[in-house]
Length: 438
Image (cartoon, rainbow, N blue to C red):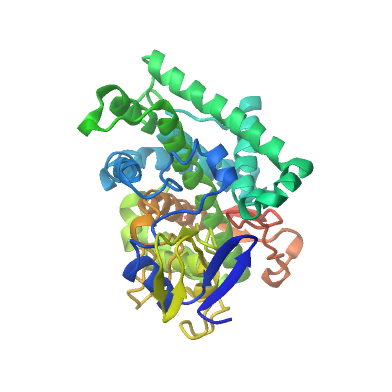
């Protein structure tokens, strides 16, 4: 397969981008031309008529919403404001694992709950993971993300929209949209009419508080309505849970398959944090170069959204000498770029060492590694997600020695991926933890 491939998906002209050079042309050279999103019937229903930041049409509304994300919700200062939340939830995770030792623990489930709790406390001011309500919310979020990553015939060929109705997809979308709106409306009402909108009895503004402040004050002349608030919170929450725990799940999978890499990371974390009696704090993370290399290598092999969120051409343009017409949908295959043998030596092998003396990063400036996209439509929540990933992974490997259940070897691990917007393991990751006594 070449760097560009043309497909006809129903009535929609589609170009698949599979090289770093082609991705650079799309997201850098012609970023303004490719800064729109395709019009999906499912997205329109689930995301409040495209009122969120991820799929809103390019224009003044989108610029204002992204500005709110970057300056008010996901700035470096805001990320640091929630440091105590990350450290508290990570300490609880370590405690849970210790309590279950020597039984095998479901790391997939633990990581999902952890990222859910961190995102809940940051976005909503409290957790939504416990009890019957928590289970219902997790199921709803799983359905929501699954539908977003699915396929609806009506978007690609209107004459086949009846299939979506017959298959039950249309009814499912209606139900999930209604249930999710009901949940989010309850959160907004709680914040509007309750003075107790603090995180775990601490005076810290959560994301809903910030957005309601803008809503009430009409800040900078920009008016955000309640649907806009709910759409943006849904973006932040979904992005802060599903994609984040996917990285942790695959990182631990690869470390269990590669004991030498696991030992290197454990030694680094234990050496740098040797004076700590409990968890590694965020202060030590900057010194953990192998930790950062492991996460980069995980993102290279297992980008959370392998086919980055699609873009759409706003006008005719030439890409690598080929004509791309206005309205063409562009899908960037981040998975293929991360495994391109012309870029990466031993491209299919897990080798974190390749990043130890490399300036390649995942923040959108180097198109060899673009798990979060780049340009105007790049993910604004990278810092928030990575702060969680680094802290959790450092503590999980530092505090425990790990092995697979029943004496299984790394080569025995099932690496099958599930389908959907984000690519998790199809089979949950179980492992046995033995507490390490320093």
